[in-house]
Length: 406
Image (cartoon, rainbow, N blue to C red; front, side, top):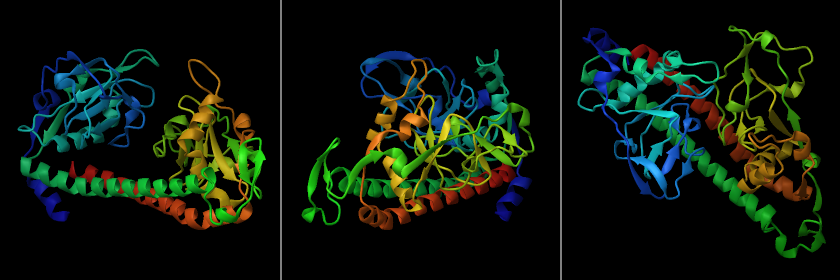
């Protein structure tokens, strides 16, 4: 590290604008393709291209040719409140992929710059890129002309390569951790399905089944409501008048709740907590959040401390702490999310009612089965929380190091 910093300090720099480093004349041609993934601005977050918000074409005209993404492409959100200026880089493409009109593609010329070095530069410049937006409030759009005029100091190619290698070590560890989380969730969900959907729980062979309003269920189980197991608590209506640039507490809004991941960056800070703030609105690592507006039914785990909960997001609190893992994996089920979508109201934008959510009928297992599931699933849940924390620390270390190297 110190040796690389010394090399950087001694290296000569060239002042280059973005235009001189990227492919020009990306003119879309049109063709019909099937099964092409289309990314939108919601897919660009935390330096990662997320496919959870993408959609798939169905024999429609799409941009092809140079508009189809390539490895090394840099994606920048060009519109969208709370997303404008976000940067992500395409590392691996497993399927033909393009972007919609809300995402700009920056394609580095590999003979002029290491594509990933340029990606790290632009990632570091997100706030600056956001400031290039033009238009009225709520209708702002990134000025691509101003973007291309941005100037950067580039070190020698050998220095670029060394910086990229160091940064990629962090990214690889984060990506490996994400794979571990995915495997843990898949395992816990498989057990959940086997026990609570297919009723193949320990001792099911000897269990007696009886009819209920939700079909046949084990005799010791019963039909109740979500509120019998889980509290669905709403966020607090914070006034913008208490926001502070130097505040200690970070305000969690709907944009922080992604599908299975928590966005740690917050737009607003609060210096002092309101006197009437409910206890559940002061969040802690491992708390379970539920989105109530827009993409309703999304679930994620809080990662970090000193977060406070705003309106349109709920926190899920198990009545019995033993059932925290059960709560998380129940709400993470795709069919349960579809159920939440089905009871949501609204046309232009869906809104999920916490009251209606906790009144939903559900099958309630007996305490013995819930205890056994907790013994297996709770360690997985805690491991996910632990890895999320590790990833956050890795990202912070990477970004701090990046600030020194670039």
